[in-house]
Amino acid sequence: MKALLLVLLTSVSALAVQIAPFRADVTPPVGAPLCGGLVKPAVGVSEPLLALGVVLLSDEKPVVLCAIDFCEIRGADHIHWREVLAQAAATTPERVALHSLHQHNAPLVDNAVQKLLPEIGILDAAATEKALQVVAEAIKAALKTPQPVTHISTGEAKVLEVAGNRRVQVIDGKVGKMRGSGSKDPELRALPEGLIDPFLKTVSFWNGDKKLAALHYYATHPMSYYGDGIVSHDFAGIAREKRTKEDGVPHIYFTGCGGNIGAGKYNDGTPPMRPLLAGRIHAAMVESEQNAKRVPLTKLAWKHAPVVLQPDPEFPEERMLKVLQNTETRPTTRITAALRLGFIRHREPIPFTTLHFGDDVCLIHLPGESFVEYQLFAQQQRPGGFVCTASYGDGVTGYIPLEQSFAEGGYEPSQAYAAPESEKVMKDTIAKLLK
Image (cartoon, rainbow, N blue to C red; front, side, top):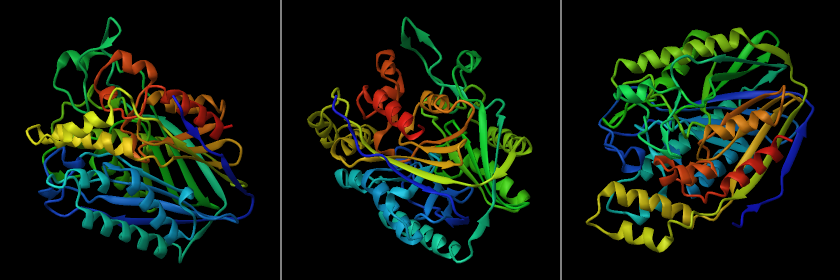
């Protein structure tokens, strides 16, 4: 496999840092496609979808961290969004970390794929472009009143009875039945949690004794139930908004490497479970801050590594083109083929980035639906450090399993667009960024 790993770019700031939190409503209109047309379009709204983030100002160019209640932003659109947000923040696109939370009753943004299937609703292009402009205006407004950051705090807490590995039933080296975000199968729910990262991690920004904003990181698919057309920021968003309301400062949630993680062990997919799951996330958010350690912020460093992942040769472009062109095939099958074809034809580098606070605290930003093993690997690169992982950056890759996952089978490798050898590229890049 050929993989392109470009020059690692690093910038370091040792001067005063300021923060400008921003918040924007990006709720799609009724009738808008959700999850790229793979589920029922929007017929109503349970909770608004939000784009939340911070701009960090220092002697270097600003850094933008943005988490949005979308399913995915992919390929050329991910580039476009970062360009627009960078312009609003007077910075460069490689210094914008843009991550979806990956709720499914939410938009998927990929204009290139929509053009492949113009007769099928994959996104509302006008609505998503309007949402982008709303986020850009929120950034400009926030930059009028930045606040100095003197300290950061870090803490973590276990989340109880939310996450479970989806690939726990392995028979003769093959993955069997899988529990997803919700499961009513008592046998699947009785299986062990499997490999997860049980900790929710929190980084907060302070001006002396005044808290300014908090970032939370946890690895699981963030859906309790979906497919009914009711737009929702689901249990992670509910917990986040509760903390914001009771704390009086912005709380921002990033989904970690939850590609092979879901709530199906503990969630039967019924509506009463959504507030229960939200309560469990909220409890961990509160505890993580109670356990936090606050230290002066003396240094800020940003690293950027653009990477090209090669497509899986088992799914050649010609075959995918035939599938999406076959009008007798189910729309969801055609959409899935188009999404894979979108990755094959998108040859722009995918951004991997890190933001380092001092010598011990690091935020790492990864693409796609990365498996939890990448998050745990990142933590292993900084023994004694505090590493927070945001996945679901550029969603053009689909799932990013381990190489061995392809031999094991199961759902995720069938929806992984990059070659099995991508594991080595992923880990090499993560190690370089965290060096």
